[in-house]
Every structure is written in C-alpha cells, then in structure tokens.
Image 1: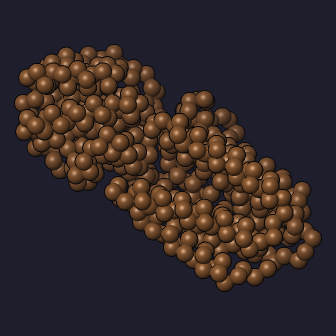
Image 2 (image 1 turned 180 degrees about the horizontal axis):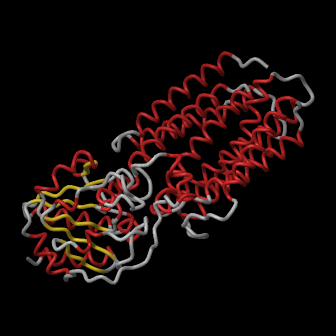
Image 3 (image 1 turned 180 degrees about the vertical axis):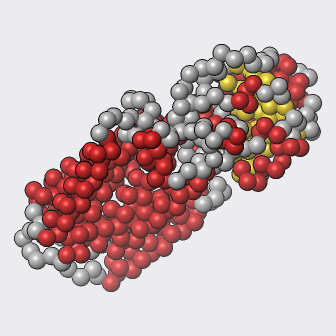
Length: 459
C-alpha cells in the first residue's frame, strides 16, 4: 500500500521534530523543551496510523496503548533519581523486544508471499538484535537494582558458549533469508535472548551503564530495520537517530573511562573489569568533625565541589546547594566539577543539581576545571571516589588505569564526605584518602552536609 502524501508530510514534520528534540536535549536550558517536542512528535506519529490504515483489532491496540501508558506514567512518577539508569534499561529493553516480536510476526506474513532478500535480511536482523537488546537490558536492570550481583559473572566455557551462540545466530539468520519460516525465526529469537544474557553477564561495576547505552544503540538499529520491513519511514528515521545517538554516547562514555568498548564488554574474561575487590581498608586516615571542616571551608578563597553517586543516594543536593550559597555569601568562589560519568550515566549529576536549582554557570566539565585545582584551597568530595582516584594515572595494574579523572589531588586541602572506608563503585582503594592533605568526614552525606551548613553559618 502506498503511503498517502499527507501522511508522508506529517512523518517529515515528526522527523524534523525528533532532530530538534535531540538538539534541545544537548543543553540543560533547552532539555525540557526538547523532551516535550520529541514526545509530541512520537504521539502524532503513532496517532496518524489510525487515520490512514484500515486496522484490525483496534480495541486491543488501544487497550495495549492504555496499559503501556499507565505503566510508563506511574513508573516515571515513582522512579528515584538514583534509579534513572534502571528505568532507561527497562524502557530500552522493551523497545528492542517489541521490535523483535513485530519482525517475527512480519516473517510469518512473508512466508505466504514473495519477499526480497534484503527485506528478509532486515527482518532476521531485527529479530535477533532486538532479542539481544531485550535480554541484555534485563540483566543490566537486575545488576543495577542489585537483584543479582553487580560484579562480572564469568564461568568456565562462557567465551566458547558465547561464540557458539553468536555463530549459531548468524547461521540461522542466513537460513531465514534463504528459506524463511516462522519456526526458524522463533529459534533465532531465542538464540538472540541467550546471546544477550551471555554478552552482559561478564560486565560489572562502572561498565554496566556503558552497556546500557550500547544496547540502546542496538534497539535504535532494530527499530530502523523494523521501519524498513514495515515500510514506515518515520520508524526508519527515528530508529536511525536513536541508533546513531546511542553509538556516539557509548563511544563518549568509553572514552571517559579511558577504555575501548571491546575491553568493556570482554575485559572481565581476562581480568580487566573496572570492578575490584570491594573490601574496606583498615589503614589509618585523618578524620575530623564537621566544625573542623567548616573552618577549612569558611576561610577558603576557592572551593571546588566534586559530587558523586553518594550525593544522589542521600538526596543531599538541596543541602549542598545551601552550603555553597552560604560560602558564596562569605566571599568564597565555589564551582562544581562534573566528571563525564559522575553518578551512573552522563548528565545524571547535571540533572540532580538542576533539581536543586544550582546555577548552570557553577557546573564545570572535567576538561574545563582540571587546570584550576592547583589554585584551589579546598576540594570537597561528596559521595564520589573513583573519579578522583589517582590510581587511574599512577597504577598501570589498576582496573581504572587510563580513565581520565578530576585532579583533586593537586588541591591544597581535600575533604572527603564518606559513609565508610569501603571502596567506590570500581571496588579499588583510593590512595588519596591516605594523603596528608586529606581529611575525612564520616557519615550520611545529607546529615554531614547539614552539620557543615550549621557550622559554617556559626563562624
């Protein structure tokens, strides 16, 4: 069936809106508007189908949309800021799984008519890669939600089993093109599910969010291929945009960790994961009270705050902003140093601080602020660890070696706000904690920041 001209024009407008949405999402000031434009275009793109196609089972379709909308709305309302990566993983997995099922249904229709080899190849690709994205995303969700170990899971024979699964998927995809059948497609989908699980199991620690981004790119590519199979231009364009943006994000995140995507996926097989032992150290450190740290901060000329995942977990961003405001009133220059993977995903920390009305001008990216640490009186590290660990520069054997970090060790004084001496997400000890310039203030970030705020006010 030929798509009417008016529908093609609507699709073109929606595609332009998607591009504008991506542009808007690139900056904190325009992100909300970009999100609304993209959502509106997606709604219009879905709604227009009901007006030009003679659909069967409209009631079931509307019912499924209503159920999905309700689940998504309630989920988005209830999800905590610290659980955003998990939500992204689930939504991403559902997209890949849906694309795989649609392609499987289309394959059944193709067995009754003559289909071109490229169309069959796109269908096989959508089935297997969509299944990989679905099962892989489920495993990443379980790891981040700590419903299973977040450490790499490696067992004897895993590389062989993974290679065999991948080779089997390629063979079945070729068979699907040569002699399409629903049975072959189902087995291909099941094999894709297995490959997705085996792909993500060896990934752990700080690498998991990067794999979520990679699987997001996979989902985008499957949606694009699905758009070709269905003859839907908008799906083709939207999937290509998601696939391209996901690929770029994956590359940027891997670069921020100083490692290749291949090393992130398969590093654990040779002991190269970023996840270490995770044991607390009993080496002596210098700790102090909130009043002592308040004196350091209150009489400093320049302070840099390094926020991390612990800040997000404690929901202490509002108290931190109050503390920074009070220091600013005393004449102290305060900036926030944002590592590219601060929190658990790029932009995670920016959103968290924006929620507390922190001015964007105070947020500085790693490359912009790293040269300022030498002139800084005090660095206040709140709930972060790996992004300031000098082992990334000095210890070739460390799992995070090569990862670009914030140069907190160059400041005149370093203050860590930590719950305990347990290592960070990468699970390795931070020598900066034992530096003579370093002072530790133990406790929950929200409580200790509250005490610091009171102490600074009383100076």
